[in-house]
Length: 209
Image (tube, rainbow, N blue to C red):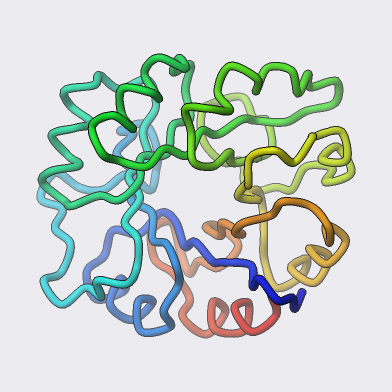
C-alpha cells in the first residue's frame, strides 16, 4: 500500500548475528528480539547485537510479564529503543518504562468480541499498540486475525499490525487504508526456520507495502 506516509516494517524474532546483518541491509525500520524464554524464537543466553548493526534501525525488546528491573537492565545492555509488552502489564508499568526513556509498544491479542475500551487506560502511556491474533499462549500465532475488527478501533494511537503476515497476504494490507497503521510486523511468515529469516522474502515483502 503506497501512501504519502509509508507503512514501516518491523522484522521480529531475530537472534542469529549473520542473519541480523543480512536483514539489516534491507533497512527495516524496526528489528525485534524476543526475551520471553518460552518462545521458540527467544534469544540465547549469549545473545549479542553485532557491533556494525545500523544505528538507524530501532531495536525492540519483546517481553511477557517481566520485572521492571530486568527489562531496564536489558534496555541498557542492548541499547533498546522500544519495549514490546505481550502480557498483563499495567498502564502504570507502561508509564514507568516511558519515564525511564524507552518507547512502549503494548500488544493486544484480538478475537471476536474484543472490547476496544480495554485500550483506554493505555492510550496516554504507550507510543504504539500492536494488534495480533489471539492464541493459547503469549506471543504470535503465525496466523492472521479478521482485520475487519479494526474498524471498531478509534485509531487514536498508531498501531503495528501483526499475525501471520507473509507474501501471500501483504497486499491485503491495502484494505486498511485510512486507518492509523504505523507498521507491519513480520516474523514466521518470512522464516526459513524459527529465528532465521529468508532475506529474499523480506525484500519482496518490503517492496509490496
